[in-house]
Structure formats: C-alpha cells, structure tokens
Image 1 (cartoon, rainbow, N blue to C red):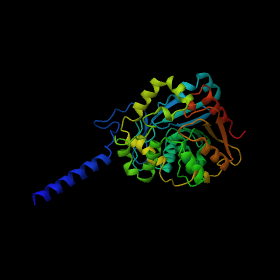
Image 2: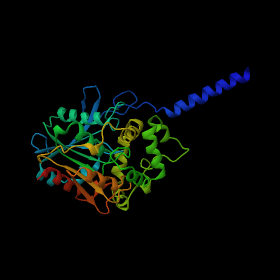
Image 3: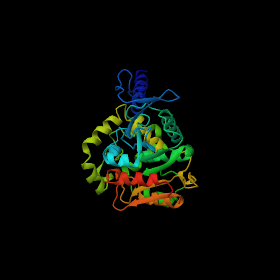
Length: 346
C-alpha cells in the first residue's frame, strides 16, 4: 500500500514538473504591476490591446509618402534600420514619414495570444487609421516582418500604395513550393534549426520548452550562432553590436514566449493562405511590390525566393550578390529600397 502511494505521488510530481516545463511563464505586460514601464506613445486597438510606435522623418501632415515599417525577429520599433540608414537630406528629398511599431508581444505592445497572419495585417490597418495616414500607405518589412507584408498583400491590398519585402522569412510548409526544392532549402539550415522549425510547425505547444531546455541544441537563430550568418552579415553586425544588443533587450522585455516563440509558431505554422496564390494588387501600375534578397543569406535560402519571384512575375525582384540576411545595414541599400518603392509602377 505504501509503495502504491509512493508511486502515485512520484507520478504526480513528474507530471507537475513536466507541465511546468512545457508551460511558458505569463508575460510581464508593460504598464502592469511587475511589468516594464510604458515609455512610448501607443494606440488602443478595438480589442483593447495597445500598439507602441515611433515616428520618423517628416511630420505626416507635410510628408508626401507615409510608410509603415515592420520589424523582424528579435527587434522592435527602435530598429536601427530606419534611424541609421536614412539621412535628413534623403528624408527631405523623398518627402517621407515613417512609423515603426512593436509587433504584439514585442517591446511595449501588448501580447496577442490569438495572433495570426491576418490579425497582424489588420493591426497595421488599425494603426494607420489611428495615426491618420490616409486611405493608402506603404508597407516595408524585413525578415519576419517581411512575412507580415505578405499578410498585408492578402488582407488589406486596397489600403496599400506599395510594398517592400527585405529578406523576408519563408515558411517551408507553404504548399506552393515543390517538395524537392523545399527539402533542398530546408536541409541548408543547421540541424538544430531544422528541429526548432519542426517543433514550431508540428508541435507548437512544445515551442517554449524546446527553446529553453538544455538537453538538445535549440534555435541557432535565437542564440545568434555564427553559422547562421554570412561573411557580410558578420562584418556588418560587428559595426552595429551596441544598438543591436539594446534593441534585442527592449524587444523581449515582456518575455520571449509572446515575442520570439510566438513569432516562430505563427511564421512556421499552418497559414490561412499561400503567398504564391496572391494576385497583383496593382494591375494598373498604380503601385509596386519589391522583394530584396541576398544570394548568401544563411537564414533564408535564396533558391526559394527565386521560385517565388518566378511564380509571381509582378514582383520586382532584386538579388544582391554576396548579400546576407542583414541587407538593411548595407550602406545605401535602404535609400535604394525607398526610391524603388516610391517610383511605383513607373
């Protein structure tokens, strides 16, 4: 009898320990007791959540062009891409206003446990309306932020003046990819990243545990393993080490689960649509869509971006020889992206 009770207690303890290991801690929501303070301006969405944002460039009431910039993985509204890569002279010449914002769970924006590709696009639309950006605006997204731009092209194309995707992360489970090509690209990733993506796709409820356990190597992208960076990436990031560290700390201050891990579950989960089924949102050349990709990107295989460009010939595809994943730090690139975007279909 004593043995049976002991076994039952041990099973209970192990079950409890396993549950705690799989269950992510609650986020430290900004502005709540125990959470980080709110320091940025925020808008309140219809569902009660808040989005934090930062404005750059010309005042929006005098700017000719309004742009919503979507940050990538481990980043936030303070992304140095806009701040450090556009001079006041270029901003004045192009007549641009840019708003960067924290995606849900990042920085000072409230988490959204129901986040989907569609909800992110609708958040952007609501942000633009809350800031009075007019009936049409541009969207730019880099890396995981590029995935969000696909959602904008699907769900709010009528609100877009143009779109730019910079090294956008792909989802290996988009059905439009040929199986053999997708397998070839997938095998280019580090084995530990292949496993991290498998978990995020097939067992999202294990994503937190997988990326915090110590038994097996977890995401090499999160840990910034050198093997996930190209030679160009290493050179460029070395010059931006201090801003990078600050931005990443700000990005995950509410917890990694509702920022990084949620990103993985959404980005590599089952999507409601396939980007390769999208139609040209600008059939009369009233705007344009651009995709910028480096051919030495270790995080996003160029062979899949080339396939997307072939499937969607209305996309203006720009491939940079020797370019890695952090293209946005290449001197002059962001200015080039903006100039191409603002020219539209001309």
